[in-house]
Image (cartoon, rainbow, N blue to C red; front, side, top):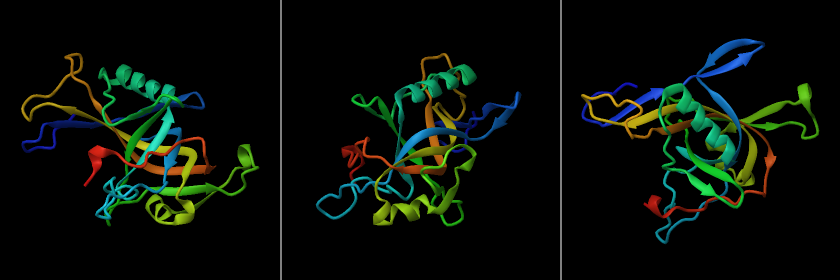
Length: 206
């Protein structure tokens, strides 16, 4: 963990993930997982402003199976010693899904996350090909794509722990870490109607 300086209380660290590639361990700064990405329209309040500020531009909801999320938390615990907080997640007990808020780069000088669609839905194995149709932000702005899409998301993940500028927090002291997911790219198989999208959250009203 490192502190960015100043008077802020948050310490952060980037996570790396070790994969077995043909029998050899390989450390990567990204992880991939089966997810659904929510580009469905969101409610607006009576003043005409979105209830979810910045949605589709700087962040989106991503839904993943609860066992997958729990496995990620266990990996982080083993690899770093930190227990992971569920703060900021939404639990759908009916479908055993967890919704996380995935950050997206959106500034002019930042690479925006790519949105890819499968070319032939009947293809399989090595025959599967994807075509990039734009950034997630561009696709989100197109009404014909404003649905929940299922596919594979690629993320960078960082750890955020509250402390003080002069005291580095350490695991095992009762504190919990927050996981920050940044969406890098998504490859989609198509639209799904099996996930009920979140349309507003009262604590994000602006």
